[in-house]
View 1 (cartoon, helix red, strand yellow):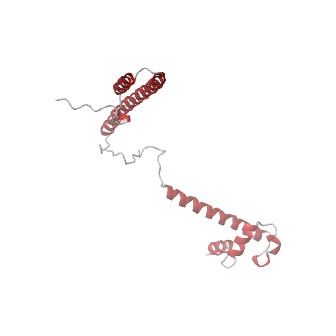
View 2: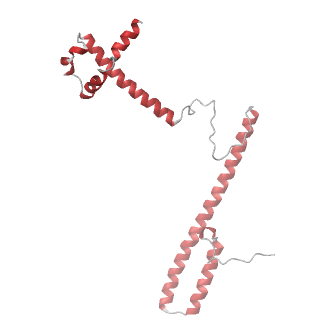
View 3: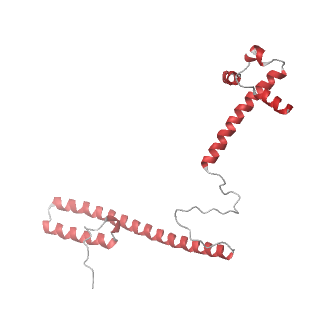
Length: 186
């Protein structure tokens, strides 16, 4: 038993075939013939023919693209099945892989080892340690030049404003160098 055919005018544009475009052309041509052969109708007929040609071309391109995608999908499925089969032969488990899962080869030296948040935290800590190192280096320069934190006024002239602020913030605490010296004496 045949299904009742759906008019090409009622179909979704993505489901149109070249035959549907020909059916549309036939219906429009038949209706134009009913109107008559006036000059205005003839001009309209040429425009309609051009639109139908464009529609036919677009439907052909869409159908070719869909066929190419289906072939690519089939090729990818075959490749995945082959790789899963190789993995099973190599002693790996044949666990099914879902579309929302990330597959990581543990033998790959370039595999990701940290999450983005972990990397951000490490970079932030590195930047803080670099700032502390610069401050400690400047304090060490002060001690090497014979100036003590109590008489550091002349040494402050050569320091950047940012480092002056950091140095003054650290005055309330034991300085980094003092902490290092006291730690090394223990």
